[in-house]
Length: 252
Image 1 (tube, rainbow, N blue to C red):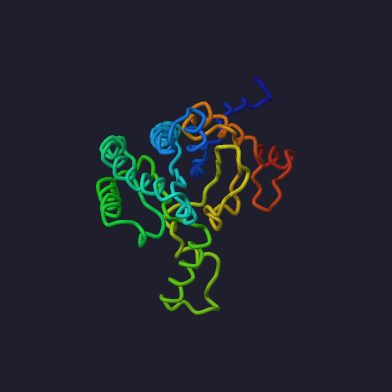
Image 2 (image 1 turned 120 degrees about the vertical axis):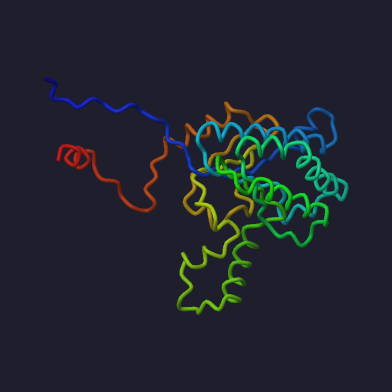
């Protein structure tokens, strides 16, 4: 009889929640001598592929940065095109995503977008509200600082006294209070910054930056990011027990 316990199979760590800054659409189009809008259009295709790939791998939440509160500074033609793309994307992909168990939620300040865009968002959320396979949160007209400020305002409006305003209590008023904090933060396009995305929620997220432009993002790129995540030592400020302590506990 062997004195050694059989080693359990190694299973790659799959993040429960992945957040993505989908950067590089404009540069992807420019390199092909195409208008920037075509980069955003192909970016939607990449998003649909990524939602499917994440769901297939057991990721429960995917949150993407589609339009920041700073993106209003872009040329009017590009902003208008992005708004139109929202309507096209809902029309072309909503039924497909809904049939595959995807729940869609929109995160951000809805006050500046048109009634048509808001109606499209409402439809997407209503049609998919009972789905549970994966939750796709689309951050549109969103900023991390805006999120913290609106949470503070909501807490004040709710009558939360100052002495009762803990991190956990304030977290209940954040725009994504329904989801766990991201485990893995991915940014494509070669830039190495967070750009005001999920500032509160990414406090302990593992960061992964890639030169891949978003329209080219595929399953192989996703797997590379997840593999890098699996190699990280996530201690959350603490200290993990030594191998000897783990062995002793297993033998007990």
